[in-house]
Image (cartoon, rainbow, N blue to C red; front, side, top):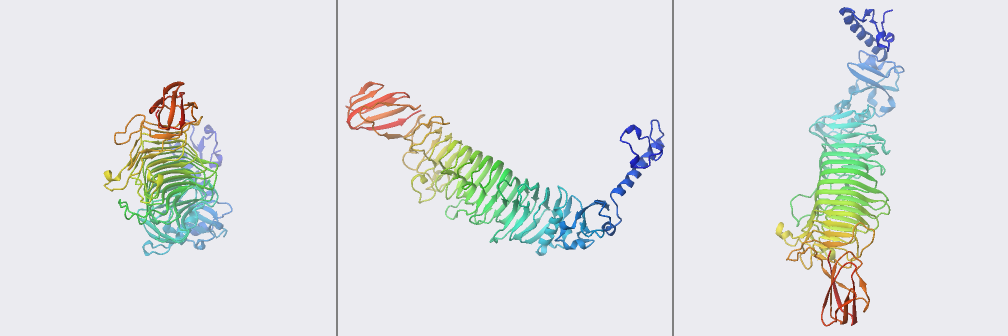
Length: 621
């Protein structure tokens, strides 16, 4: 029997011997092959028309039986059946020709036929005259509602022009939706969040993004205004964005685990508003490749007489766990903080950062890693090839009375023009913090500084190492501006263990340039033991084992002291009323004059006296 329809086809290839009676067996005639191909095409078309109708026009499409057909083909476009509830705010769906994107079914008024093209245009969704400054919010909302019911990967294109949007737009609440502007697309906006990806449920939406849009906000934005909100959405692309008066580029939520974004080639000028965080991300897995943000009212000319410290924070987070961030090509200018990791209330971990090729310019603090929350920590971060300018505070500031800072590396990072210190390590729990090949220059900018705020590199606790770095240069010699120099190049803990300061160069405006290296103690089992050596200071005081001389309280008369440290140190014993000085049990002085002892690890010494002498100690390697 001839095979006259698809139903007669066999899944066993050699059983398909003819098409409509035309033999396709071995050694069949050429005419049989030609006729068989034509027959296959006819059978396939008949079958397709049975499954997917091909109405002749939109009126016929609206009348298609929606109880049996889920798709139709009209003029080369595929149309999909959707429930009308997806379009409850689009009354114009009753219009057979509205938007050329969806048609209300006359067969079943609860259904809509929606064009399933991968790319749709904003012009389709309303009468838009972009250069008249009419409010285009309705057209955007209609387009987004339609976008939400299209398959993953659908794109809304915004034609070139200048649009005005008042208030917040409908959220993009389905996976894989993109909004792409053509060249020269600008949106003016004030009030509410312009674009939202997500539906308020963590990871409820995956993939999507905003590409090639110019944003114009207000210099005095209304409360709650923002450009983009990541409301439970994961893997958001923000690319090719230009903006002026941006209050918030991105705010993430609703909870700690929402997040994950890719920012590429974004350049904006932002509102400098106290308490605002321009890029406020949460969650995990973020990539930045080219981000330039400047606060309004701040220029990039070095003019210390007119500079006003920033109010907003350029990049901030800490309210949610953060894992795996790779950022490069960052430039921020004129903010309260260039980068602020601020853990103050929750026991979470902010970890696994790689930040390179960055410049946090004209900030109050360039980089602040603040941790005052018990539990969790700021861990495993690397900052390389960067500049930070902390005009009213510090260039780099590790701070925290409770929380920890562990495995944090600064490599080739240059901090300068600090209002106070360029580097301040004030965390009480540090472990494996490394400053390698870095600099601190032209600090102590504020005239009211006192104490250690006048110094360039200041460490109040242990758990760190600093190698091959330079601190304390004067701005007079480099910038031609007098008064920009730290009091001391570096100030170490006076009674803390576990730090290394080696191979560095330091200078200061007055006195000793390496200050307060005294009273060091050793704690067993730590990564580091206190060590200060191989550093270089100006004025000829360069020696491999340089360290400042500090006073030592005289022990009880005749009490034997043992050097239980790994260091060699020199003792100078003079004045008082001394009768004998002992080194390793041998009398080496009778008190007739000063005594000098070279004490190696394990050595013992003692002094017999009636009036305590003055003792000075200089620690070597």
